[in-house]
Amino acid sequence: MGLEMLLVDEQGTVIQGYITPSRIETYLPHMIAGSIYKLTNFYGSKNKTLYRVADPDVTISFSWNSVLSDLENSPVPFPEDRFRFHSYAEFEAACDLRGDLYDFIGHIKLVNEQTLSDGLVLDEVEIASSRRILVHVQTHDGPVMKLYIWDKAATDFCEKYKALGKPPTVILVTTVNPKRFGAGVFSLSSLSSSRVFFDMDVQATREYLAWYVFESNMDVANRVNAEIVTKAETATIGELFSYMNQKEAKVAWFECTATIDDVVRGSAWYYIACGGCKTKATKGPTTLMCKKCGKTDIVGCAEYLTKLTVYDKTDHASFVLLGDAGRELTGKKASGLVERYFEANENVGDDHVVPVPQALLDTIGLTRTFVIKENVDEEPADERDEAADGTVKRSSDGVESGEIKRAKCG
Image (tube, rainbow, N blue to C red; front, top):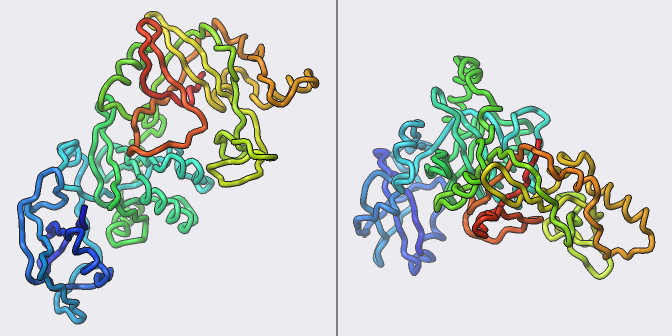
């Protein structure tokens, strides 16, 4: 598609630049980060609103006779870093308009829905699998915002986090895209061009950190309740279906109170997972293997993968319990139930399907509040390597839609 650039002139004006695919190899090898160049023989053209990443509505394009000269002793003092920040109100006004991409800075409240502490350790296996990190960030005087950090930016976040040796206070992410997910939930999303900076990385983060530490930070920090930030929205089964059928539906958390009608039988109610990352293990010639960890000899353990049929006052649905959710419902680990079955039935083979245990059957008729994570095209379209997926199904019309993961109960 060509090479997109942001060009900054001696007056600090930012404009979009473009090199066609056939000319990338001519110019890119001579471009060095931090260098200053003089460009002659170029042409300008109006750019489409869809592809704009700077205020001017024109693009400077390299032509066949363009000359890029390295200025080793430039008299122009270019700033080392130059950021363009937007406030919460400005981001909200630009939401889903596909206009300019601005930078965002604020102080971190939560990382993957966990409060910051010296003992907070990032689950790098999970992050590598989901390819994203969710950070709740607050600016000087604005509300808490959800910031989704994807792909390479998520990897950079992890590396910087480990190098820092402690949870960062301030985060700056460049070229973020304001989007409205689900039922009007406003958030920011990183792009392939986004870069991540923490506390002392650049002047902008150092200045913000100084304000946060020495001025009115405590007053701002005390306005935010982390439990409110991550609280799931209450929904009926019918409202879950309605949400999932929206074209713009994205990842979201819901609380749904329902009665367990039955536990689906006739198929395995658990899966054998990697003892490390909980991904579904695969059978090798003589050992169990994990595709995610890349190990060819792992210790497997049983994890819940149980399908329940549930109902509320108006609708029926199927919920799938994964992992810890099953233990929360029954009070027993799946691995313990499986082990006890094989101990009591020594004559059955390893491939024998363990029948649904009484601990699960005893939940029939119970009314519980399930915390449902709706995973509806949350991320860029790529293959996902998940341990297991579940679906919600409306019994009245037989329509399946969306994915439900980790239906926790309480």
